[in-house]
Length: 287
Image 1: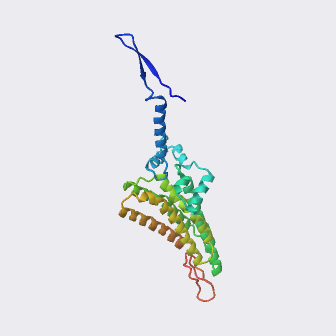
Image 2: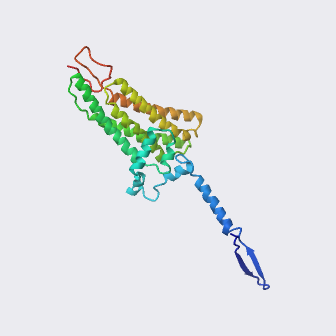
Image 3: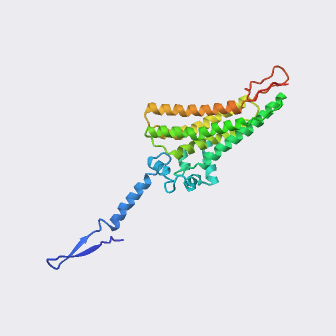
């Protein structure tokens, strides 16, 4: 197709003369090419999601069209379906690729909240079942302790929401510009692995429980550090090392807390001096 040229007629006051001025360089095809370049450049800036500065800024301003006290402001962070939540949770169990490729520009709070809540519920249920099994083997009567439910809720919610908040603040202070919702979603979905760990820790074997907790620690810890490292690496080397140490230490504290408080049961029998090496969380003497 030939290029169209747009001309205008100019009438001089001194004499009658026609002059033709060509504006094809500033409009038409030329203008379209310039516009296309700007569009492609803008699109390319979002090619690296999750912790891309421009993408993070877009994520953090998702709710600007609603006042923060309105329901609509928070509803958009829960706008995901079951398939998306399951996909993101599954990727946290097998962290072979970047979590950014799964989340994209739409991190959510729905998955982190319900996964954490499910972990709390399972910790109480499975620890109660395992405790009753240990009491039955020991010939004792098991008494349910609902205080561990409150303790579990505090521990899990603090780790899933308060710890990533601290990490985000520190990284923001160091100029790394992480996405707030991205960091919360990362920690929230990292709790997924503790669901199967809590279920299988019902097995009355101390070595099996330690192995399961170690596996859960390794999978979720690798998932978090692998996805946080690109933004942590933007900080100075010394500061980056301290952040990584803090992340691993907080994660190790959670794993040990779960093992000691929820997956340790004392088993005593009437044969011999009792005990199979299991640390006791629901003490009591054997008959």
